[in-house]
Image (cartoon, rainbow, N blue to C red; front, top):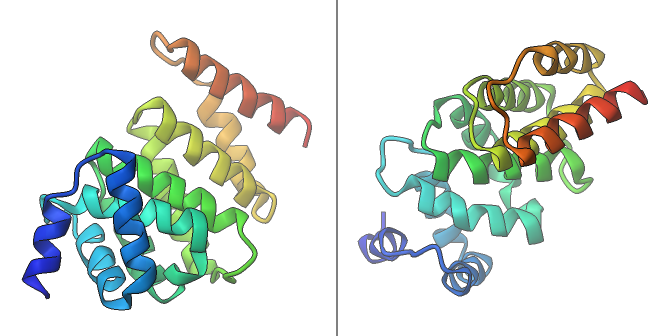
Amino acid sequence: MNSDDYSLIASIKAYRATRDFYKMRAFESPEFLALLVAVGCNPKDKHHYKALWILELVAEERIALLAPYLDEFCNTLSQLTLDPAVRPASKICLFLVTQKEIALHPVHEEKIIEGCLDFILREAKVATIAYALRALFRLGEKYPWVHDELRLLLSREWENPSPAMRFVLKETLHRLANR
């Protein structure tokens, strides 16, 4: 591991311009991208969420760059617990299931389903749940049991849902009703 590059990851701030700078660096340097994945997929590393911030932007623009790291990423999903890590991971999951550039293996899809269900069951923040629900809805088109599971999850009582959460729940239930 290049300690200079690791120090850069450790110093990343949430500013969009900073994240865009490191996204471009990941595009230009396969070694830096590999380090981002190694750090981002290691929940024991205290800076893993910062690497996931950058990986989210990489996935948004060039999802194919993550193809060699799918096993690593998917195997990590169920281990992520910090909100700043779970949100970008759930968004990467959404990107993975909606794109056409990478053929996901059924094992990857299974891990994404498991991870997204975990995010919802742990009652993560609204954005995380929204991305997870959308990813699960898409996967439910291939695996109908996922839609059944979503209906069951969404039918339970949500304790004092925020207006944003009510919108996400209503949107998903509406989409499920129209299937």
